Amino acid sequence: MKLRVQYTAQLRTAVGRTEDEVELPEGSSLAALVEHLAAQLDDAAAGHLVGPGGGIRPSLLVVVNEAAAPAHAVATTSLQDGDVVLLLPPIAGG
Image 1: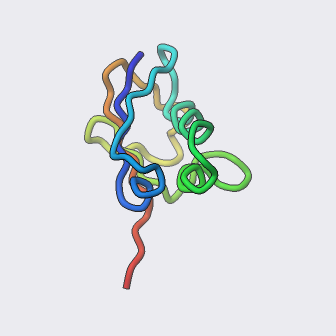
Image 2: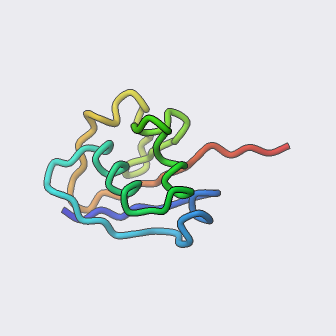
Image 3: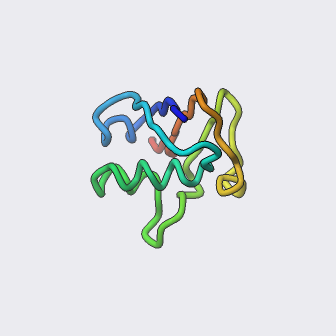
């Protein structure tokens, strides 16, 4: 299945682009997508997605087709062909 992944904020800067098209096996979970992306990116960019011990960062907001996916459900959230996934890391400022 093909998915469109959109990057925002400092993640977009770290990745160096606004989006990617990703191909994964049918029925892959949201967690599998994030792990796949982290494996493809350099350490600085991957650090926005996964923590030091692995696993998706709880502070990462993931939106699938305009609906936020709760952090506790990323392992069980299945993706479908054509889904659009927006990755929004926390934004700090002052």
